[in-house]
Length: 269
Image (cartoon, rainbow, N blue to C red):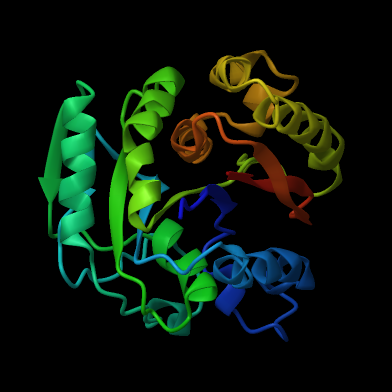
């Protein structure tokens, strides 16, 4: 059975694991609950439980596509200014070095330079959403980096190369944010973020796969594109998920409003 590929929002810092009674921190607000509910239901909504996950996060870039081959990765607490308990969170899922090796082989066969590493911990684009989606930490996971040039067409092509994993019981997940401009919050962000999100969703869900890929690769032509993404590292995981989706139908899976931003998730297949 073929698994879909997903683009998910991973929230802001450790937002799902903050004290909800703390009114001084916007990351504790109830606004995060719809996103948390969406992530909580991810695995149950799949046609079968994955044997492993391959996840590309907006928080890891390398010169070449790089896979993490570690068997028991630690956590990389790459957020700042949060309460002490958020730096002792645990998500103890095993790594998936066999999936990492398979991913590297598929990318290499498609002509991509690849690399491996085994020491880097899982960043919060991995363990924060996965701690919600897989609270038992019982699905092995391999992480794939972005490529530092952030070329959308290359990331779509990389996703296409990885698509055979979907038939091998591996869930391909792009973890980012469809809107990511940390300089704007609240009312000034809402109207342009909604217009951007509507246009992005129209492009992502275009029923023609070739046109879909072309429209999303040309994301900078969409309204408020650079307002939504002053730098596009949080959007590029979408390109990988879209490429891995191939010719399968693309569907709008989630929208919530956080920090004044409209933020969406998508499913391919």
